[in-house]
Image (cartoon, rainbow, N blue to C red):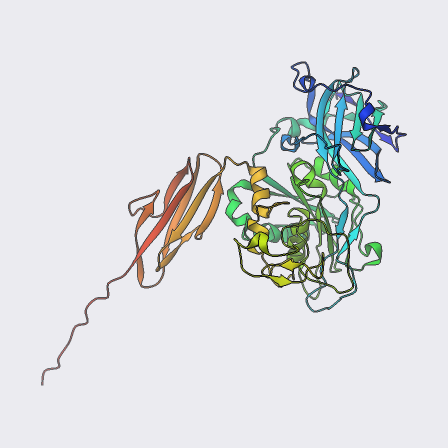
Length: 497
C-alpha cells in the first residue's frame, strides 16, 4: 500500500503586516538546535513562493513536493534595523512559535538582457531591466511540526498558517531518501525547457558542450574536482518564452516552475542554467544583490537558447548570463542611451584602484555607468571573448569575485595545488592553481616539448616518476623540470678515392 503524506498548498495568502519591533513571537535560538526537532522528512522539501509588492513581502503559495535540500543554504545573520536593509528572513515555526528552521534571502531585482549577437549592433536595447515587483521561491526542508511560515524585513513581517488539504504519493521518494543532505561541491544544474523525447538528444548535446566549456574556463577549470555539473532532461513546462518585455532576444521563465522542477530533479543545485528549445538567438538571467549567493544563489538562474542560428552562440550566451547570475558581474559594454541605479559588481567601478593589484588595465565605460571603468576585455564585454577577465575572477572586495564565490561553496578547507614548469614542457593539468578536497589524490603528468625530456619533479614531489599522484593534505607547490636532449655528435665520413 502506498504511503500518503499531507501536502500544503495555498495561493495568494492573506497577510498581516506588523512593525518588526512588535513581533508576536519571541524567538529562541536554543529552539533551533533542539534535539526534539527530529522530524525533517528526508525526501520532501517545502517551496515558498514570495512576491515583493511596494516593499512588502507577500506569501503567494506554499507547496510540498519530493526533492533534495542542501544544508549549505543555511546562511543567517541578523537584520540591521538601523538601515533599510534589503535582506529578508524566513522562519518555519511550530504551534508554540518555536523556530524549526530559519534562513535569509534577497529578492532578485535585476533581470539581464543578453548582448546583441556579434554581427548585429544594437545600442538602443537596454542590457538590464529593473524588476518592480520581484518574486522568489525559497526551498526549505520539510518538517512535520511546521505550522507557520513567517517572513520579516526591516519594515515588518508577514505570517501565514500552513493549510493541510491535499495528499501526494510518496512512493517516489526513495532516490531522495538515499541521497545525503549536504554536498561539499559546487553544483550546477543544466535543465531542459520545451524539449520532449523527439528532440531531447539535441538538448543533451548542447548541455554537454556547455559543461565542457565551463570546466575548461577559469576559474572553474581550477576547481574542476570540486564542481559537479548535472544535466537534467526535464520535460516539465517551465513557462519559458522569447520576446519578453518586447525585447526579441530576451528569454524569461516562470521562476516558481523552474525551482519546482529543479527541486524534484534528484540533483543538488547551487546554480541553475536553463536551455530553452528555440532557434531564436537569446537568453536572460538575474543578478542578485550583494552577497545573496550565500543563501539563495539558485534563484538567480541563467537562460540560453538551445537551437541553431546564424551566430551559433548558445554556449557563449550561457556563460555570459552565468557571469551575471552566479558572479553578479556587470556588463562591460556601454550604451549611451542607458542609465540606471548602480548595483555593486567587481568589474565596473567608479575608479580602478580596487583592482590595481590584479591588472593595470583601466578602460572607461560599462553598462552600469558610462563614466565608470572596466578592466581587461572578457565575455562580459562581448561573447567574442570566451573567458572572464582576472578582475572578475580574483577580486576579493565586495561583492566578491568568482573565485571567492566558488570557495564559499566548496569550503575554505580545500587545498591549493600550484603547478609550474621550466622552459621545455608543460603539465597536465596545465600550470596554474587548482583546488582540491582534503585527501584527494591527484594525478600529474609532465609533457616535454620536442627536443626536451622530463628530468624530475621539484617542490612537494621529487624523483622522476611520470605520471605521478600527489595526496592533497596541505597546500602544495610542484614544479616540473625539463632538460634539452643531447644531440648526437655528427660523424664525418670521408670518401676514399
